[in-house]
Image (cartoon, rainbow, N blue to C red; front, side):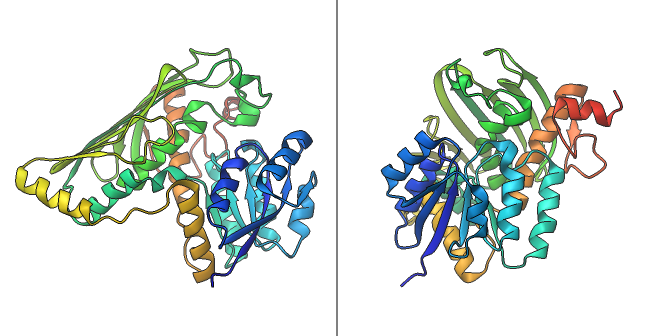
Length: 364
């Protein structure tokens, strides 16, 4: 019988989706306590998911010795400190996206983890585990895709005034960025998941849809380290919401569904260049064994990583790759120049991409 891990959840918003993922893994996890500063929402979530304890004291979770994992589902500006406390209290940590507010914080967290061997931090990138994207990974692993040429990714969603009525949204200080950071980051992670790290980006960003501080529309041109190219577009002003991923290889084109929040799932379309190669592709896909996806699959793999003491399914380096793209895109938008990656400690936005922080660094 699998060892059951006990989870303390901090936050009561998107945490409901996490709790659904834990619920589908009842043999692997139990959630005895939830912490939220919003009492009405927190107690409602506890009732919905059968969580016995509610608290507003996050520190009480870190002090407990009967929890294995701290799950962090709070606004982005609180992530780093909560992750640090979780690791230093001897627990494993799951944290929602965007993980942190700078590349410097990612590197600092790597130092924290080095001081606590065996503790694991897993960023959330649940879209990776849709069957469509997993089939593409399978075809690549079997050598059936060929050389990568071009990837196009569209994140075209709608967010109106009601969305930004939540006080922490739309502000640099609390949300840390706009649609490029908080919405398109999943699709951009899938770019890195398939092709590896980015090498350079040129980006335009604008605030066109809502009267907010951060960007709600962006267009990026990207060079990948593997030699292929990518174009990424994001807007929160699309009345018809879609997400689209299209991967062009020498021997194959892979196209996602358009469903905005489940674009990694089937049915994807895989088109080969010849009938003979299509038959090979179809045979490989026929042998694919579907399983759980989304949070359910990511949490299942995290349980395995803890029990077997292996790398988490999504790593700190994966989060760094995604945040490097965001950092480089913001720098490109402000300078009007292509921006290379990786982002090192001497980069002007290494410690923060927030506009006021950039001004302080430059002595403005």
